[in-house]
Image 1: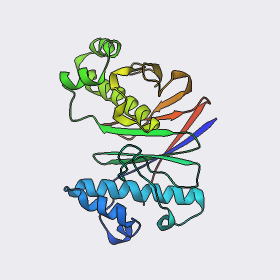
Image 2 (image 1 turned 135 degrees about the vertical axis):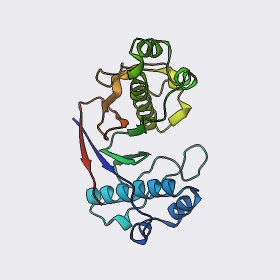
Image 3 (image 1 turned 180 degrees about the vertical axis):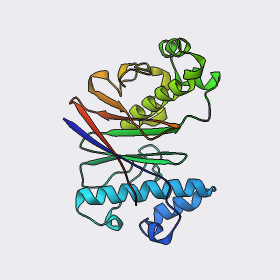
Length: 229
């Protein structure tokens, strides 16, 4: 059994009590965002992740230090890890939703998206392969945007779990159709296999779609909770 906990939050204010939990490197990243909303989402993701990791590890949030070094470029925007721990985390945010997924030992990926921005033909062609576009076209027009973001969040979650992100071509993955249980059906990328990929759709609230993926061969059990700070 693979246990995965997903916690949701709305954006925290850029208050000193929360900023005090960031490392100097994280403060620099926080300052680099031009928009206030982006700074709040980044801050909330880090505070929530540090709080949850601290509870698992028996540490105060301020004592949780992530290594987010990117494997490709060495910059601190990679998957956050806790050195010396088997805890795995994934952070995602969109609009008024910030989520953190946690597992032990198994790589995990989380993605949440607003469904209000629409999905034009160029985005659909970029993200979906022939099989998936056929399933999308079979739906009523009113259902296609929501269905597209079901595909999108499932794909993003799977790719995040590998740590490679968009280096995996979106169209190399075939996901189960919207309205059916989330699953990776096929992959032409060697980093992913349906046999060792477990997925679930999530409930982040009205106006959002979300999914989580864990790379392992056991049954996946997901719990979702709201964090109130």
